[in-house]
Image (tube, rainbow over the protein chains, first blue to last red):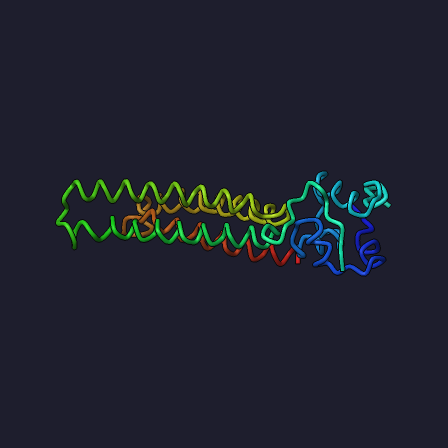
Amino acid sequence: MKNKLKVLRAERNWTQADLAKALDVTRQTVNAIETGKFDPSLPLAFKAARLFKLSIENIFDDSDD
Amino acid sequence: MTIPTNSNTNDTENNTIKQRTNRSTRSLMIWTLLWTLSLAVIAFAPKFLWDYATTFTLLAIVVNVFFGFKMIMANKVHLESLDELQQRIQLNAMAISLGVSMVFGALYGLLEAVRLISFSPNPSNILFVMGITYFISVVIGSRHYA
């Protein structure tokens, strides 16, 4: 599943550690999500959506293309 | 830099995921150490300390079971303190170590019967296989998601 976490984070000048702290996860988890190696759970996706004040669909994209 | 935190996240200075994990790891380490020591007491103390007195041995067993229970609960708390990626890595490692231990254990138990080895299989060897497999699986899992 693709996502815009890296872009959204960069727009705010946040490091992976900053985002990890805000989402209450490890930096490794943020990195794994950004690189598409790990898909977050629904609660974590909602948490990210609330943090960036966006809808989940605006951050995560499960389309094939 | 100030980053807004979610209202339902208990993200105080004393309760970040790193601090929670450190606390639970320390607790798990202490109970595991106590359990191991109590196991050593059962293994050696009856012979060297109290000449196989049943009362003391039973008491040592009760203490060992208690420490074992606390270790199991500390491990449960430790797993719950991890974030979802870490939990997945641990789950994968558990699945692999359980499977390898089952396959290895079943085969190992038959080796003497089919005369491939001349000594009686020691069940504690399976614990080593389980521990080593678990450790390797966690390392591989962590590297995979790094």
